[in-house]
Image (cartoon, rainbow, N blue to C red; front, side):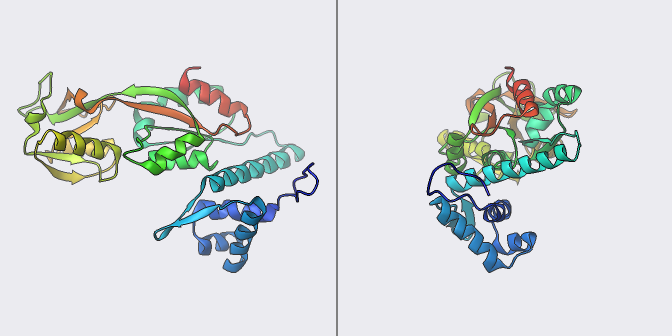
Length: 304
């Protein structure tokens, strides 16, 4: 139990809190109950009792899926912090000197093209083990907001492109890591290869390798080309820069990618300022307790 100095306020029930942390990871009562070794009704009661004790809704149903509320994300993060503190106490009492890992979450592109130097420099100092997670921008923001990761790096979507993920940014501290533009990638034998300037009319009836609908770049392309009344076709929908570039190299279609991408042999790029520039932000929870390794990695990411 957590002591509370305020008269009349009951201590937080740690068993209920741990059940909620497990539930927050899975967002499925059946699987969470199995992971906790409880019956589903028992786990459901723990979550309900915790919500009643806190006086806040911790999750809601959206269509066929469950999602955490802001209070639920904060509660899950605090639960994970308490779990980490308990584990650290056990290590100290047992005389172990190994530190708990620092967890960073980011997308494939950030790891491939932006974060290598910071990761290498951190590992040279090695204040604590570094554990890496790979998720898209929405998954990265959620991992940080719920305490699954201590830090994250992502190019976050606008409110128009993804209002749910954008809303999470209000719960996080953001600092820019890099700003990148876009380029159109074409095979070197393509008629557009060697152009220094892209005209949208050059893409009339082009076949493009694009992200699935709902991804920020796809939304930006739909707005840009649709607004310019430029007809185009989807050659293939794909996620991830390496696979996107692979399809371009195979001649499947052309593609817009971030300018930091390293191009395979046989491809060339044309600047595409019409798509604007995107900022990659480092993110963390403002209320998370300070940790040496987390602070060092944060400074490496943001150049502080």
